[in-house]
Amino acid sequence: MDHDLTEEMELAFMSPDIDLSHEHLLPPPFQSDNVSQVNGVSAQVSIGEEPTDTDDDTPLLAAEHVGPQARFASITALSPWFPEADPDSDEAQTFRVKRSQRKFLLNGCAGLAAFTFVINLGSLLYVHYDAEDESIFSGDCDQSGKLNSILHVLINILSTCLLGASNVCMQLLVAPRRSQIDFAHKGYKWLDIGIPSVHNFRTIAWKQKLLWLFFALTSLPLHFLYNSSIYGTVAVNTYVILVVTPDFINGARADARASEEQAKSRENITMYGLQDIPPHHYVETTLNEHNWRFNYSKPCRGEDCDIYQTRMQQGAFGIRLDPVECLSAYTTSFGNQSDVILVSTYDLATNATVAEDLPLLFAAEEYRLLGPGVFWACSTTNSFDCRSPEKWKNDPSLVSNWNVYGYKIDYCLQSQHDNSDLCRVMYTAPILIIVCIMNLCKLVAIVMTRYLCLDQDDPAICTIGDAVASFLKRQDETTKNICLTDYSKITRDKQYWRGRPRIEWRPKTKRWFYGATLRSSILVLSGGVAYLIASLFQINNTAGSASSFVHYGFGKINDYAHDNIQGFSDINLKFYSRVLFVNVWQFAISMLYIQYNALLTAILCNDECPKVKLHDFDAYKV
Image 1 (spheres, rainbow, N blue to C red):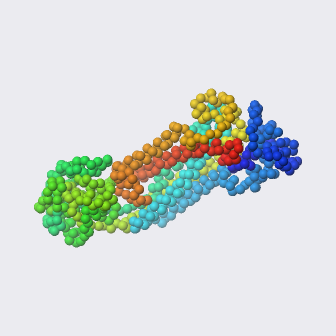
Image 2 (spheres, helix red, strand yellow):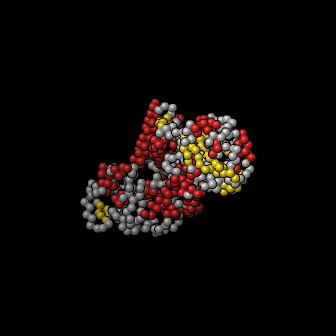
Image 3 (cartoon, rainbow, N blue to C red):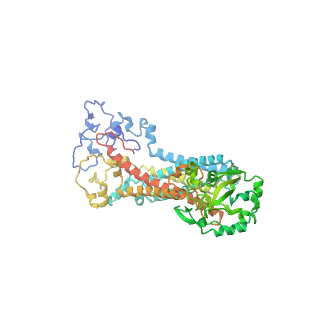
């Protein structure tokens, strides 16, 4: 019966072999508290006293028990008074009953899979015929970011529905049948009931195994690809960094080769600063620890760098920034900032003013986005952490000695290149096609699971209530004399399967922790803790603080939350390698979730069992 065993249902928990025909029954007089006379036969309608001890091994619900000491009556006998006791009665077919039926659950799973398939297929057809160059949107970065976030929320809702329906079917497929339980018990083996279980896998039928594996395999592409079917792109400027004296600003001719020789001669001068690679300790390092590349002809595009003086005269460097403002602008890779001229009059490395005959002090090749963080601005010669801008924004004295390659920066001249309208939201047709195929496969598998799990001859026992109903209807010969045997004893020693003296049920309160084995609890909890610690450690090494992720924002790009993956010359291989790298961490989280779900389900199942006691009318779910 696929409904709650309520107080009335407990009365109907009997063998269908009992035939107390109601055609000749007198109206129930209810002259006593617990017993009514039914055609000369006393049928107990309430469980109020201790059962009579008997050595009879006849199943509890067999017809022979109908008599003065009978504890149960038949549906046939009770249905005239309690129509709800008959599952086939119209009065019993309420929505509350229907929604608890396995058919309702599986129909819901199939409906979810069909719904997500229609959405995914419709989306693929729409973007294929409407979008240009695989671009869903192109334009303002704020709008692009919002659209990208909304689409990813929808993707995660759809994937949750689809994977949730898949997981339900996988749990039903590994739920044992009564015949499988009896066979396992005869071999002194136990099976899991009511929880997601890999332990049962070797005992289930081959059709169930194939379907279970099919569900698992079709879930992998969804875990690794679905989130990357839609992605956003942003434009990032590359720019040249020049350190000059005020004379350069006033038009003094620079000598790029002389400046390069001067820069190379300073390579081994040491200063105290922050390492630009993890673990980012404060150490004494050389000026070239940052591995500056001295090729002045490339950034200067000539021997005298006069191109930048010309641009200054044209007003390209019209934005003047103090050190704090300049650091704030250039400690992020994303924005309109472009080429920058840093003006210096003092050399901290030698504790002297800069040479008057060298207008160009330093020039760096174009900065490109190569990895997490922007470390050129702080390099390894500064004693403050540029990854913590809130500190030096609140206290500018922390950056009073900000320097680049040892030259103390007085102010900056910034140029800008507007890229705020160069953002796009893209789709990946191959990934969307794979998602649609996997979605359709899951829909077919769910329909097959529906017919497989609704076998009325040997239905799956998915919950504790199913097990109670099954064993009350037909007892198990192997375990009939080992009631209340402890799980640890059953799994350790086969002698406990051969019977033991009967013991009285004495309920006692236990903490939820005892609902699962110590080993499984330690493995699951330690796995989650280890993943969390490793993540925080990586964030701390990269961003300077383990708590910095709370400031990243939802759907925002952050300098310390990206990386550059090397390898593969083919553009498609590069793209898909990044897709797999990005989603592997989400897959790890999903695996942890499944383990935690199994652990909590086991705990709740063990918590549910003692609640249905002799004198309480709580219900088991079936």
